[in-house]
Amino acid sequence: MTDLANLPVTLDDIRAAAKLLDGVIAHTPIEMSRALARETGSPVYLKCENLQRAGSFKVRGAYVRMAKLSPADKARGVVAASAGNHAQGVAVAAARLGIAARIYMPLGVALPKLAATRGHGAEVILHGHSVDDALAEAQAYADQTGAVFVHPFDNVDVVAGQGTIGLELLDQIPDLDTVLMGVGGGGLLAGVAVALKSRARELGRDIRIIGVQAENAASYPPSLAADALVPLTRVTTIADGIAVGRPGQLPFSIIRELVDDVVTVSEDSLARALIFLLERAKMVVEPAGAVGVAALMDGKIESPGTTAVILSGGNIDPMLMLKVIQRGLAAAGRYLVVRILLDDRPGSLATISRIIAESDANVTGVDHTRVGGSISMGDVAISINMETKGHEHCELVLKNLRAEGFQPVVLPG
Image 1 (spheres, rainbow, N blue to C red):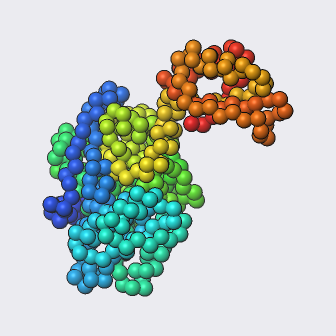
Image 2 (image 1 turned 180 degrees about the vertical axis):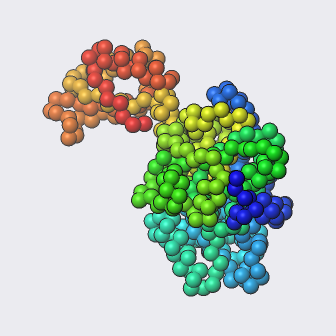
Image 3 (image 1 turned 45 degrees about the vertical axis):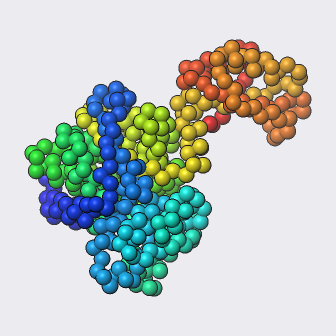
């Protein structure tokens, strides 16, 4: 059994962090999800950190880290790097504490996140094409100027601050059995694991802690298998909030001791979960905040019991939301795009439209072209976007088109 008192972050650290945060952050609400409860056969609650100040849990760790600085350190200012949530958390904490903050963000960062960070009073410098580039520049600035570097996850105070969510959860759901949350570098997962495992041991029981990663940005499963940090060579996911290619050393040392499992979900599952939260829970959540819901919807968690899913953030770029919604609808069989090659003669499009209408699908867009590498002289290519009612309905539309001699090719949503 792990000696919890010898971990780099302890329950006492998290309790002290909670006192620092009193009156600074929101104690975010929980919402019961009846739809998820029906799917899992167990009560499921959503911990709404998407409603936290600055739109994510990140302000917790940032504030604790910065509130504990000496007056001399505060006078030198802080520097950080982020593509979004950490940037806003540092900016909010700095404004509250009266500390000058410089934030490095990569070129091409989403405009709403850039505007929000500047709106909280931080100086923003755009640098590089990735968060890793921005992190390197932020560290270089700290080395040159003496500004305090506020790491997004690899720091004891940051981990303790994130762990305060665990204390809130157990107060809100005393009979908690399982908790799911997204994991990038690991600060949130490590902090919550310490809080809940320690409190559960005091109460003479156990709480299962499960991290969830996007399958194209899953650095923890290979690292845990090797019992060493295994960096990824490539990270590609819509869940930019957890798009971290290498676990943090400090969080990893805790996660390997306390966390019960780390599972992965696909991009399509993420998109479906985001749509579910919009429609059924009326929650605007970014993809990184929806990974726990995706894992439940995919059946990745067996016999979860009373379950909490941490919706870790709600800072989603509206342009990304449009793309994710379309992908989520397609993954759920509610949006179908087909391409059909046919002879360029009058009446063909009318026939196709009739078949689709008789199949009770709704056309939302048509693209008609005679030019292209795969289009022969005398042929035409038609791409049709349709609203459908599920996978069985999609198959019916395709079957009816084929029955009339057409050969529809399904395109990605």
